[in-house]
Image (cartoon, rainbow, N blue to C red; front, side, top):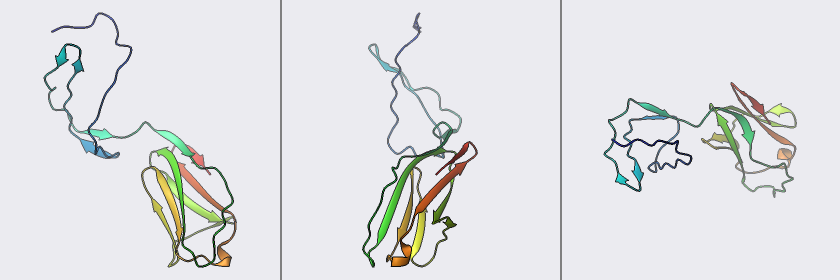
Length: 138
């Protein structure tokens, strides 16, 4: 077995497509370098795939939106937060709830507000708050 006498400064790795965060996997590892490709490692114990913990951060800039009455409105908000955040939506300071016209959806890296058919009463200031064990962001 050959061992490096100096630390490796640049380490690159590749994962197969389809790795889903918050799922468990069993892994085998192979080294690929100028000497060639190594034999695969022994199978690992189950490994939990997740990004490092982080406070919620919104990747969205505040902006004015004009919607025509009767149109469907979909507002996607990209974010980063680990662990998975609790998401609450507010309009003009009052918490919103799902109903037959309004729905909320959460994905791993985004949350969504959808209004099936906008009414004049839907105009106002909307705010989303993400909260996890590390903090909150609005």
